[in-house]
Image (cartoon, rainbow over all chains, first blue to last red; front, side):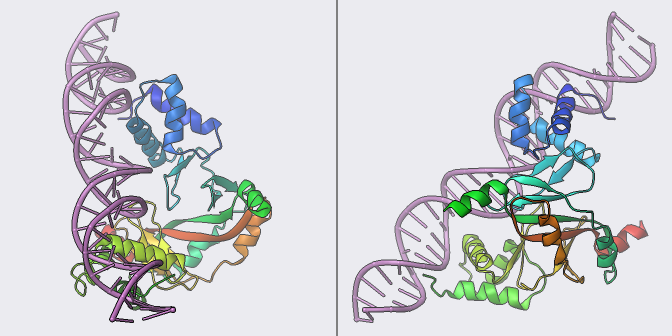
Amino acid sequence: MLKYSRQRESIKEYLDTHRTHPTAETVYLDIKQEFPNISLGTVYRNLNLLADMGEILRLSSGNGPDHYDGNTAPHCHFMCNECGKVLDIDIEPQDQLDKLAGKHFAGKITGHVTQFFGLCPECNNSKQKN
Amino acid sequence: MLKYSRQRESIKEYLDTHRTHPTAETVYLDIKQEFPNISLGTVYRNLNLLADMGEILRLSSGNGPDHYDGNTAPHCHFMCNECGKVLDIDIEPQDQLDKLAGKHFAGKITGHVTQFFGLCPECNNSKQKN
DNA sequence: TTGAAAATAGTAATCATTACTATTTCTGAA
DNA sequence: TTCAGAAATAGTAATGATTACTATTTTCAA
């Protein structure tokens, strides 16, 4: 049975009001202002809980810490090879991919994730100046 | 300046002759038969080196260890939610995606990765029996 | 053949995340 | 309301994957 907790509410609210794809650490440091004693473990536990309930998304970057997203509508992300920043990508969902991929696949495909890579606007600019 | 090493050659050969998307640990355990004193660090260093040179691919699964692929031709992967197995997906490359994604993006997109999720053939079968 | 650069083995350290435990907070029924 | 048990927490220790460090060995061009 899931019980209310002020910490979880605050974490959820942070993700609902920020579209910055923060890491657990970033969320932790912010929530610390309201709950000085909150522990990083609590942040991780609640982020996992919210992700498992489908209220937020967990974005795994391959290297470095995971990022989280309060926007659960299907959309893609970009990850900067230089600074690691995560940005939303404005592209229509490729819903046909799961069916296409399942054509020659004996198991069951339930979804896919597409991540784009390259240089974010800031890093791209500073590269060109060099 | 890159120098030859028998260990690196053996690692490369393992990936060229196995299409199982092994982890560093798996490669390590196999190569240990030929080089009993090889260290896990050497395996990681060479896998990173080969990946940086574009001779192999590193596949990040989100949770659990990374997998490696000797097949550098563009293709997609499936990762089993149950057992973590990595399989190739037979689907035509979606080359148009990068251009589509770049349309409303101020930075520079150099590529993308699409990973499929679900149940592999084995896990799907045992699920249905329960 | 040789000597400097690069690679190695073995080990310690790091980073992100999870596990553990004593204490605190919720919450639903009395 | 009060209270007991379940769930959540803070604080800390532990884990797992990977990287860093260092003394020794290997490679290879002169």
